[in-house]
Image (cartoon, rainbow, N blue to C red; front, side, top):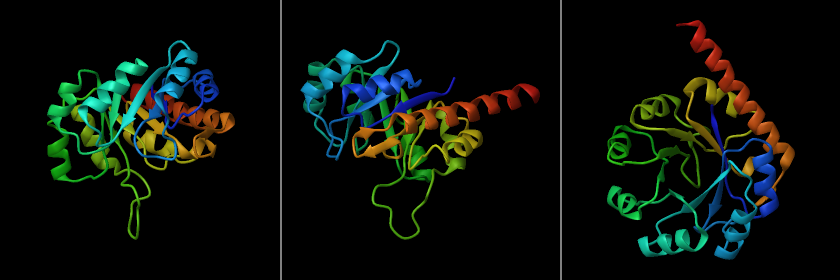
Length: 213
């Protein structure tokens, strides 16, 4: 079944709501962000986390010692790395890693292959600008699936996620801003709409795959 990750959780009640609506993972951000939280808040969220939902710590270009300190203090078991962390960094961290890639080329595919990651998160570059993509390169995402689990992100909404799921059939999808009332404050109805749209599209691709065998 398609995995759903709701990222940028800042409140225990939002983690509870995400789990109740069917999320498998919630993302807790410790990198520079409007949704960044402190260790104490993360501890409160994990204490209230519904059974079957796992929290992921999100980091970017932080030192190995800092990431380890936060993982140890919170009890987080998975790290999502958004920066220039090397394959060696990921290995030495000692926990399953979701490694993010936001450029799509032969060179970045060669780089991706070097990581022994739990999953690869494919995102859009921050900042955008003229000529920036509005969604993930689906051809590149499909190729990346040959090297591990693929988690799709990048401006996904309840309206756009279904088409991307049908095209790529990823391991999972990741969303943050489009299911919010304000940065870090989630909207349960939007979470529900997103999850239902993603899961319906995935079930549709499963039926098609079975019919074509």
